[in-house]
Structure formats: C-alpha cells, structure tokens
Length: 497
Image (cartoon, rainbow, N blue to C red; front, side):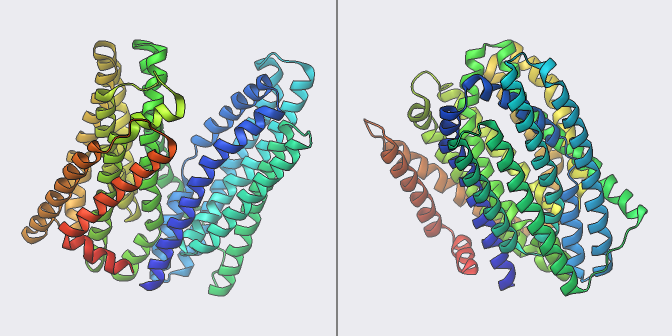
C-alpha cells in the first residue's frame, strides 16, 4: 500500500508541475512571442491553432478507457488481457491520429483561401502549421502509451518524461524565436515535445512489457470492445465541452459582448480551482481500478470514502477562496470594470461547487468501470442544458444562465451520481450515513467560520504580495479549523504520512 501512496504523491506532484508550467508559459512566453512575431501573424497562428484544438477535442477518449481497463487487469495480474487492451488501444489511437493528420493537411493546403495575408506570412504560417500538425500527431499517439504507464502505476517515470519534453520544447522555442525563426520556432518546439513524449514512453512501455513478459496480442473483438466504450466516453466529453463553452456565446448573443467578456474573466480563475481539484483526483484515478481488481470493492470502501472526504473538503476550500478573492484577483490582473459583480460571482461559485462534486463522482464511477452510464449522464446533461440555458439567458440574463447550469448539475447529482455513490460506498448503512452527516456538518461549520474571518481581512491598497498573503491565511485558517474540529481529518493526515 505504501507504493500506491507514493504513486498518488508523485502523480499529484507532476500534475501540479504541469499545471504551473501551463500558467508560466502563458505569462512568460506570450510576451516573448509578441516581441519577435508580428501581432497580426500571431493572430493568424492562434486561429489555425484553434482548428487543431477543435480536432483534438473530438478525441474519443481511447486513452482513458485503456487506462481503466489495463489498471484493472494489472491488479488481477492478467497479463494476457493487458496485451490485448494495449494493442487495441494503440491501434485505435493511431487511426484517430491519422484522421487528424489528414484533416490537418487539407486545412494547411486551404489556409491561403481561408485567410487573406501577405505571401511571406502565408509561407511561414504553412510551415509552422505543418510542423505543429506533426507534433500533434506524435502527442496524440503518446497519450495511449502514457495511459498504459499510468495503469502500471509508473507515475514518476511518465512525470519525468513530460517534464523533459516540456522543458526541451520550451527552451528550443525561446532559443529559435530569439534567433529569428518566428512561428517556425513554435512548430519545431511542438515536434520536439511530441517526439520526446512518444519515444520515451514507447521505450518505457517496451521495457515494462519485457520485464513482465507480456505478449503483444491483436484481437478484432477486443478492438470493438475498446471502441464501444470509447464511443460513450466521446459522448460524455463532447457534452462537457458544450457545457463549458456555451456561456460566452449565449451571453454575447442575449446580453452583450462586454458582459460576455466580463463573465469569461470572472469564471476563469474558479475554473482553474476546479482544475486543481481534478489534478488530485487524476493522481488517484490509476490506483482505483488496480485496488478494485486486487482486493475487491468491499475491502477498499473505507479508502474510497477517505478520498471522497478529502476532495469534498478541498472543494469547499476552493469555493471559499474564489468567493472571497475573485474580485481582487481580477482587479490586479486586468484592472477595473472587468468583474461581473458579487451576485454573479456567488452563482459562479455555487455552480463550481456542484459541477466539481459531479466531476468527482464521475471520475470515481469511471475508474470503477461504470464507463457507459456515467458518460451517458454527462451527455444528457448537455442536451438538457442547452434549451434551458437559451431560454433563461434570453429572459433572465447571466443569472438565468448560471441558474440553468446549477439546475442541470443538481439533477445529475441527485438523480444519478449521488444514489450511485451511496450504493458503491455503502452509505445507506445507518452508522456510515450518520458519520457522513456529522463530518459534512463540521466542514460546513468550518466553511462559515473561514468565510467570516476571511471577509474581515481586507487590505486598503491591494497588491500581488498582499493577495498571496490572503490566500495563505485563508488556507491555513480552513485547515487549522478542520484539524481541530474533525477527528476524521486528523486520521486522514496520519494515514497520508
């Protein structure tokens, strides 16, 4: 069990590093791009990059299914099925990457007719886009191999591979941009990054297979099985993409473009908070099917309850922080007149809370093998959300839009996710239900006290330094109070040591 704790810790460390890397790249590299690349050319680059983003967003999610299936078989030491699922997943991912590559080549040929620009711009953009396309092709294939390594609980190795690829890609892009390569530098960096990801992960998978004496086996029926599960995963991902990307469009159409921009700014940071919650959850996800196969559901229920308890506590903390500090952050980041207001921010936080709870439930059910039903619910959410959101935004504005999101999340939670989690975690037992109620009451009490204390700590002249001081103060206040109030939290900390 100690090894699995180390897996979670290393997963979380590298997920956090990747999260910080994304933020730092946005802060440091974008100004560098704009210094050495003409702004209009960079705008064309962003537009073509969005096309690639859309193509990769329609990923059916083969890697997620591979990870769950291989991790479960790894817990059973069923190496024959590992060979089957691995080959099937790699083949399906390769076919998908080829489709993306072909579509990308067609788009590259049509760039001149899609955008009107100078001939030298077009030449540079086509080369850069072609290189980025190769990098995307390599990265998509890397995902299938990384999912196998996560399933093998090789978190440290895959984390080092990602760190190496990102570091080399970033350093090469900086060097080449400074030396006048322009957009081509970004394309070369993408190829280097994808090449490092894929070559290192392929090499390590081969090493693991030889060490475990796992045979490579191809079976068409197994390919169909992975594909059928991935279809549901695709529906769920598509639904969630629609759910998270419609707000700005509906606000711009029915309210105003300025309000749409302000809503986007106000939602940006809370969404990062949700990403932080999910980063921890993703770090735990590979070991859940492994434990399920090795020990059975009954013997790991307490461990699952502990993880759920920690995640719920973390979600409460994230919501407290963004309720108290979101306005101040936007002021420091963008200046005045970019915040949607306290009432809208309140509803954003409520939506953040319930959507995070649902995402936690979904990831647990997915990891435990309930792939089809869970993804269907995500897809049904989006189908229900769209007509309700259009109606409420048209007649009630932004608050109506957010309320429609909250309503859909509540329906999904109480109709499907909550009853399912009650069944899996055996919460229907009176003693467990009573303990859960007591712990939720304690977390709610700590939340209220932290909100009251945090609202009293306001600096007259806000700065980034004071902002970070407030963050540390709120986090410490929450966890100290929870430590004092909750024996479960104290026990959880002792287990994690």
